[in-house]
Image (cartoon, rainbow, N blue to C red; front, side, top):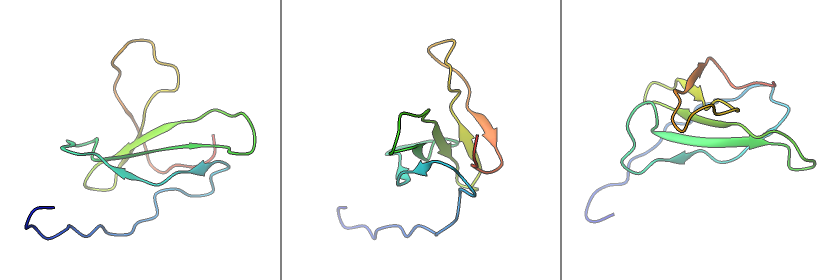
Length: 84
């Protein structure tokens, strides 16, 4: 960063009781709500589905549809990320 103080992120649990691993949450550069941060999940020990998630400034979690029917689709709001 050039002369600015780094922003501190609050720690918040965003997944509960999931059967899959969730990777590190990444901040989106120049992101806009609801796509301020994102991450993915999956089972690293065997072939499995992997879901993509995004979140906003209020901690709301959204999931990208697993089967995309078009090039652009709306994120689906999920209350918490758990097993599918």
